[in-house]
Amino acid sequence: MRLVKLFLLNIIMLYFLKYNINFSFILLFIVIIYNLILNNKNVIEGNNDNKNMEDAKKKLEHIEMIKIDGLLDDLIGKVGSIRKNCKGMYSEYSACDKKCGKDSYKYKIYNIIEQAGVDGNECDQVDGFRKKKLCDESDGISLCKYNDPCEKDEDCISGRCDPDKKTCYEKLCDNENLQNCNESLCNNLNNIYSYDDKKYVYETNSTNSTNSNNLTDKICKLKLLTEID
Image (cartoon, rainbow, N blue to C red):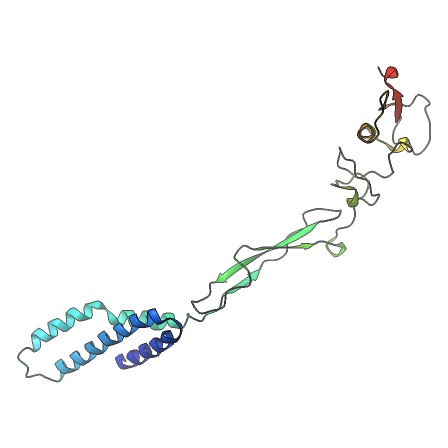
C-alpha cells in the first residue's frame, strides 16, 4: 500500500511540474523523505541481528511522527478535486415588481452550490448575481387601468398618470379639456400654463352642468386672481 501511495505521489508531482512548478518542489521533498522512511524501515525489518536495531526503531518512530502517511492520504484525496468544475444554478423567478404598467421586472438569483477546484472551470456568474427579465402579458402584466397606481403616463391605458396622486385617469386634462380634470390635475395646470393675472382653480360648478364628462359636481376653471377668494 505504501508503494502505491509513493507511485501516486510521483504522478501528482509530475502534474504540478507542468502546472505549478513551486508546489512540485514541495512534493519532491515529500517523495524523498517518504522514500527514505520506506528504505530505512526495510533495512530494520531485514536485519534482526543488528545490535542497534532498537535505536534505529526509535529513530524511525520519531521520523514517522511527521505523519507522512496522513499527508499523502490528504494529497491523494485532494488531487481528485483539483480539476473539479464549479456548480451553480438559478432560483425560480420572483413575482413581478409591479402589478401593471411598463417596466415591470421579475428576478432570479444565481447560487453557487460547489466551488471550483484549483484547475477547474469557474461558474458563469458570481454567487448572489441577480438576473432580471421584463414582465409581459404571460405574467399577467398589462397596462394600468383607471385609478390603478402608476409612475408615468406610459403605465396607463389612457396614457395619463396623475402626477400628484400617481394614479391613472381616463381623459386628457389640459387648458382645452378642463372638464376632465380632477383637483390635483387642475392645480398642476398652473405649472404647465403661466398667467400673470389668472389661475386655475377647482371649485363647485355654478352652472350645475350634467355633462357626463364631468368627473364630479366640481370643475376646473381659469379665473382672474381678483375673482379668487
